[in-house]
Image (tube, rainbow, N blue to C red; front, side):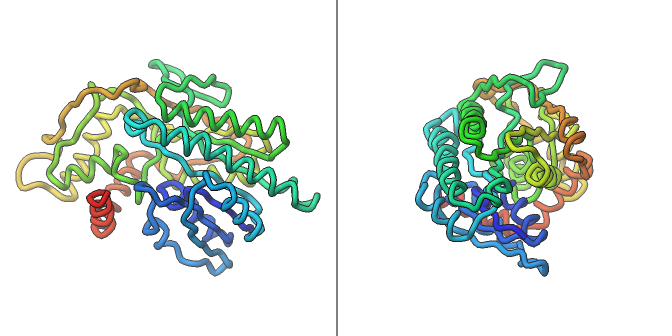
Length: 346
């Protein structure tokens, strides 16, 4: 059993990781600013574990170093897992300053608070502490029609979001190289699954479809993404946390590339079967909109290092995972209404 500080743990990926941590018997402190993308409802489904696992939510910002330092000391934290980030590319284009603050300055404050805390630990405990930093494949830029990103790929970010995440990755590496802080960085492809905010492609299309709204597809719809189920991603993160080398970088992919238009059609086909319209198909609602500025054409990850060194394996195939995701959103109308009401209050 460990005491974990999980920042951004009320968000999509973070809350799934919190659920796994509690089930494994860990005591979890969640630090989250509860912005539009984070909500206590994302955690309320998680019961305490018979193994002794539990969670507690603290509302606050990773920019608040005194608060982070207090939590590290008060709860005798064994590892810090950093999910906290501004992550929506469109928002980074219209308002990049929040991404600089949270993703760069926030990571700096976490690193400094952690470095100070670890220096106070007994010598036998210091080597066991880990700072796990969750990043994105978008730091690598855009791929051509062939090839995949790997841990050795150069960083070539193309949006304010990906640039801010690349900067945070560099900080994490520097704190390992300079100060010996036991950091680990991970990158992953596009996640999907339950409780994802509807600003993201898959839930956005589901929400728009069942609300009778247009399904907006950027450009020609041929931008390609590799998709990983959030549960598979979180399983990989556990492997990195428990078996990864200090200073290491590990990439996780879904081995499930799809262009955006094909994925939207797949969602429409599932909805046609599970919640048919009175006339026509949900695909009739697809519209093409002006492409996003600096839109990366293709992402894909080579995760053979994680498979070889950590034993990473995927549980979900893309067809099975997307269908299970559609089923979850259709079955959880209360959650959908909560998100809709929160957006209206914003």
